[in-house]
Image (cartoon, rainbow, N blue to C red; front, top):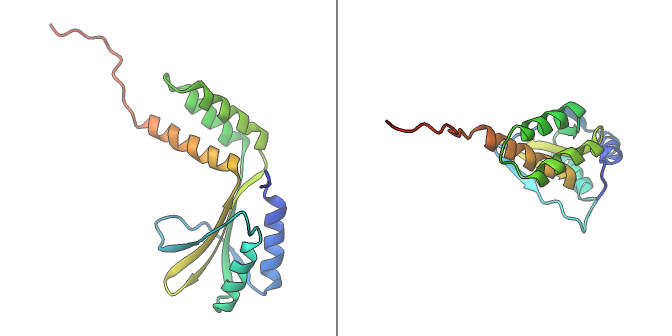
Length: 154
């Protein structure tokens, strides 16, 4: 898979507009009832089938969102992970390695509503999934309170 989905995003925009659909810039989160279109590596153009299904269902627009990795996001992640005393050095190095992908598109989501449900197509790079995993780890560590005091009871 590509390390930067920018060209694919541009192709998607052209294909969507070529089908007479409008794009609404929105991200559909997990709290919304949804059905996820299965993305498979053996059919890289499955997103075209998804857009054609949206058109055939009679909708006039699709939601579309993409995520580009920002330098500030990587720096914040690295700083958060550095603050964890017992962080695995390998994860910290992996977070630093993500700096190679700053400015690249790592995730794309297309969706359309039908009968109260959002149908979604999502595609992400391996490095973006690692970024998400590391952010989740940092969030988990933020919630842990450790008492490092060596107070002896009297």
